[in-house]
Amino acid sequence: MRQGASTVTVRWPWIAAFGFGLLHGLGFASALREIGLPDDAVPLALLFFNLGVEAGQILFVGAALGLAICWRKYGPRLPAWGWRAPPYVAGVLAAFWFLERTMR
Image 1: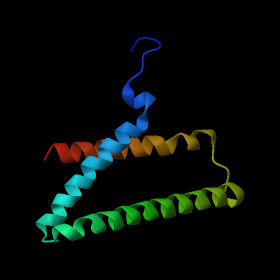
Image 2: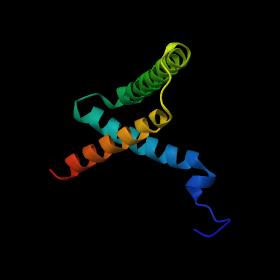
Image 3: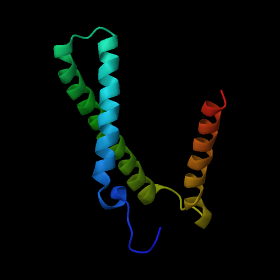
Image 4: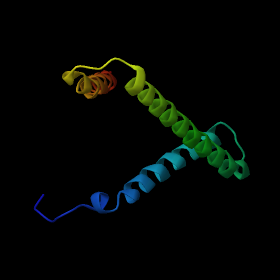
């Protein structure tokens, strides 16, 4: 990419998030219809599903931050390379799961 150029998703990342969220919601709505949920109940079911997902994310981030604060205050000091290990472990796991699912 040339200097100064930017994509729509770099300049306005909410557009990508909105698009993925919309597609996910439409897919979930069709799944709700397939299991027999009446059409008039789908919007309320989607609302509460999304509220539950958001609440779960907030609780998870809060718990992770709490653990990180406790670790920083009371936990042992990690060696310099210790802070680089978690991203590599996450990358290896992600690559493994990707290959496992695509090679089936």
